[in-house]
Picture 1: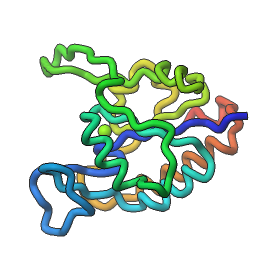
Picture 2 (picture 1 turned 180 degrees about the vertical axis):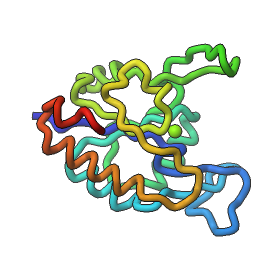
Picture 3 (picture 1 turned 90 degrees about the horizontal axis):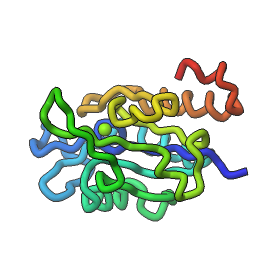
Picture 4 (picture 1 turned 90 degrees about the vertical axis):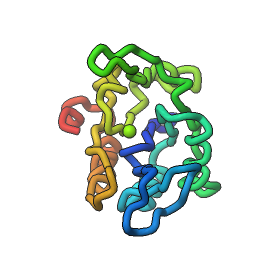
Length: 172
Ligand SMILES: [Mg+2]
């Protein structure tokens, strides 16, 4: 059986990008942005890669996604895809007069993953509003050290051990 797929958001989930440099050095720079990686990132990715297929889906531009994923994943971790805003559904947001970029997980069917094989780790619930039941919420990372990615390892462990039993998964 094919492994389950974990879709990872980038900004405020795995990293924080800022045009204003913090007092400490960034992990790397992309264009005009200083990129700070979240604590525990390499352990989290190593664990996730061992047990799941991995993909990235950000609502930023494709050139940003390509630059960031080549730094974070490089040749070390194989991604099934690295998607940007181009793959999101753009929906007008009456509150902000801007747009919400929705990640509709049904788009992954083209890659051979049915929605019930997919989980998405994202700090923005509104972007996963089409399939809230597949959303693993993570607190937004804005630069301060936290334990969210090590908590994510225990969430993924729970998913592995639940064998799709919805009772075990009701409290992710
Ligand atoms: Mg985000």
